[in-house]
Image 1 (cartoon, rainbow, N blue to C red):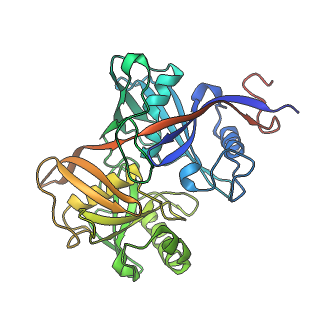
Image 2: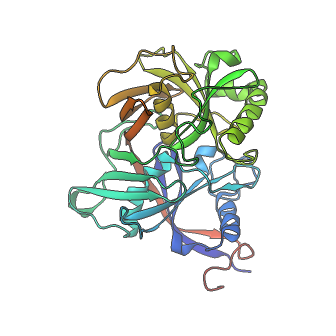
Image 3: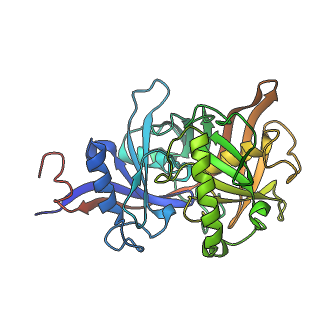
Length: 366
C-alpha cells in the first residue's frame, strides 16, 4: 500500500521543536489521529528512528492549527504530546514553547494575514481554553526569523516573539489551588498543587535530599528520585480532581530551591519521566505564580520581587527564563491577570511528511 503524504511545517518553538499541521489535513477522529501522530514522530524507539521525532520529550511535540470560530481568537491551537518510546499520545496538556511557533506557522500557512511590521496573532489553546496574544515581526508582510533576541537553551539569536497569556488560572482543573490548600502533605513531602497554564505538583528539592541545582543528566540518572516522585505526582493528580494520571503527562512535577545566579528562584521541571533541559513556558507561569502566592512551598526560598507587574526570574538547567506577572493579592487570594514572556522561533523545514497507508489512507482514502 502507498504511503500517505501530509503537508507540514517543521519549526523550533522556544526550546522545543516539532511538526505544525493544518488541522484540516489530519484525521478528524482522535483514535486515528493518535496513530498518525505516532507514525509521524516514530514513537516506540528511543531515537524515533522511523519518524521525525528527536528522541526526547521536547522534540516529540505536535501543533495542529485552524482558523478559529471563537470571538477572541484568530487561530485555534491544538497540541499533542507524543511519547518517545511507549507509543502514547496525550491530548490533555498544552505547550508554551511550541506555542511560540504558532504565530509564525499560522502566518506561513495563510491562516492569518500580516498587518504591518508587527502582527498580533490571537491564539486559543484548544486543550486548556487559554487565550494568548503572540506578537510576531512581519516586515514587508513576511515573517522575520533573524534578530537579536536570545533565550537560554537555544544557540544564537533570533527575532523576538512576545507572548501574553490570559485566562490561564485553573486551565485544567478550574482552580488556582485545586486541593483547596496552599500546601498538601503527600507521602511525607510538602507539595503545592497549583494550576496556572499547566497543572503542577511543586515541592522543595531539599525535601528529596537534592540541592535543586543538579544537572539534567544527574537528575535523570537518579532513578530513586523518580521512584519517590511518581507516586506523589499520581496522588497529587487525584487530589486535584484529575483522576488517574498514571498514563498522563499531567500534572507536571517541579522542584524549587534557593537561587544561585541572581534569579528569583531555582527550579527543575519534570515532563514527568525526564527533566526538562530548560524550562517549559507553561511551567514557568505556574512556578512564578507559586512564588507569588502566600503560603506555598516556595516561601522562604526567595526574596520577593518588587514592583507591579512583578518580574520573576527562574533559574533552570540552561540559564534563566523571565516571566512578567500582572497580579493582585487580597482577601480572595492570588489573582493573575496575565503573564508575559519573550520567546523565539524558527522555521526549519516544510513540505510533506509520510505515514504508512495502513495507518491512514488520507482524507479521500487515497
